[in-house]
Image: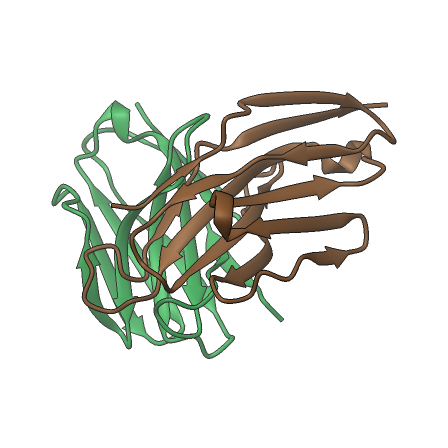
Length: 112
Length: 119
């Protein structure tokens, strides 16, 4: 089973809202990732958690705040986003960092 | 720095045609991994294959086949007898496996090739 789940599938929020994206995997993977993907572009890495610790932050603005409550869950807290943050947000996991990454279906975020 | 180039932005074929998606990569590492992912309109990136730099054997999986040639730094993907369900964006990606580098473990994606298969 290589399933990564993400909720919600779609999210519309205003620039003053606070919302969270959720990602879950039950494959026992120890690395989890957040990516941002704009239309007609490849995914861009945002954050990497390895063994529940933040190991990579690709200079992402502080209005994006990741959290890894346990080895199966990954959250992305959103606050004071801008319209240009509208994108598909993809979560992925891998057995270990550098192993094959398996992606979830993504959350399509629209910021008004 | 590592780089992946997918020169074909869009390809359009008719069902049952064979189609090859090109991928050329650049890396200074001797140990690395190459991947292909499929992204249908639903948005999920679906893993297709991973190949390490020391394994140049070609691989076939059903209608899919991959040709890895280190001499030309290419990792091409062929779909035989294409079907409408193959319509998607296909990404080639590279991951460096030598610890210590700034790109260690990170997936570098190509720009993607949009494949449309017409009935």
